[in-house]
Amino acid sequence: MSSWRDNVRSVEPYTPGEQPKEENVIKLNTNENPYPPSQKVKEAMAEIKNLRKYPDPAASDLTGAIAAYHGFDKDEVFVGVGSDDVLAVAFMTFFNGKKPVFFPDITYSFYPVWADLFKIPFDTKALDDEFKIIPQDYYGENGGVVFPNPNAPTGAALSLDVIEDIICHNQDVVVIIDEAYVDFGADTAKELTRKYENVLVVQTYSKSRSLAGLRIGYAIGNKELIKAMNDVKYSYNSYTMNEPSIVMGKAVLADEDYFQETRKKIIETREWFKEEMKKIGFSFADSKANFIFAAHESVAAKEIFEAAKKNKIYVRYFDKPRINNYLRITIGTKQEMEVLLDFLKKYVKR
Ligand SMILES: *Cc1c(COP(=O)(O)O)cnc(C)c1O
Image (cartoon, rainbow, N blue to C red; front, side, top):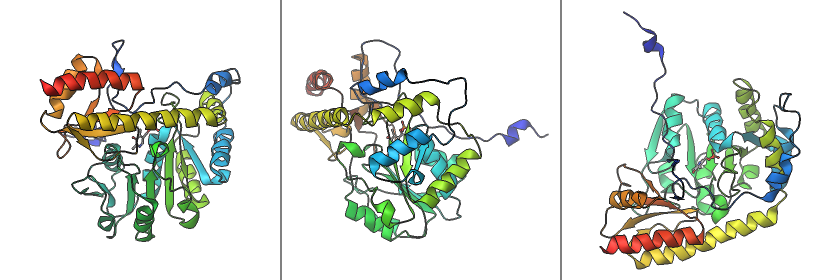
């Protein structure tokens, strides 16, 4: 007996962080920016017209603005519905070989989900004991390479030299560098896309521009890569970018001062928070992102996670091998971090 069930694509979906419904919580579990988006976004709302019509399928205004901001041509930029969309299109477009795609064992947990969804073989490479990527692990034959810089959920960043070394050893495949957190202190590899035709750099508005709700992500790469991604995109949905996102996404780039100000505030809070956390027995990789990934010397992470939640403080906990004694804590405002610290100080001393 055959059933329609035999033909269902079965996948285990990615689990995003919890979005609590209760009010007055301190939410440090999904790496959102604690500051509101630029005022320019509000001003731009008045310019949203023509919702009766389909949007420009190429989102040219937005693509052009992002390209100009970064010093690239319009046809070197691909825009998508958050960088999750951009990464999914990139996986679909570039990872079609028989050899496994390489990525770290501890990394963005969406990578294995896309690989399974698109039936891409993959092989994970273990980070070292300090949660660092070992470049030599990526020298072997593969069908592509992808890693975030800084890595998630560890926050550890690679230098451009190490990134270029990985690229040099992988010139026959596409290398994707996921820079979701790059604005918080790591070096962008975007200039390497001019030197290497096989490199794609992916960034997002969700973290450093306080616009997770707008859903804008983009990739920078050479024209041929970008065209291939657009061909794939136009083959399943021409209108991924909606008109409000195009208009507001363009406007926000004009507010560089606000971007720099909020970015710096988060970096300052993070550095202060690191020092305070060390004093109470936490250790962590030196994060260059808007979160730290911390373990306590004596109290189990899971226990802290649950107790914090009871106190309306949400952090992220992954019940997975190697990382099940760590908490990923988003850097919020200084006040939010003070509340968390007060709670932790009392809790870990018990
Ligand atoms: C948050 C995140 C993304 C995706 O963010 P979008 O909101 O879809 O732009 C991609 N990669 C990593 C590593 C992330 O943490």
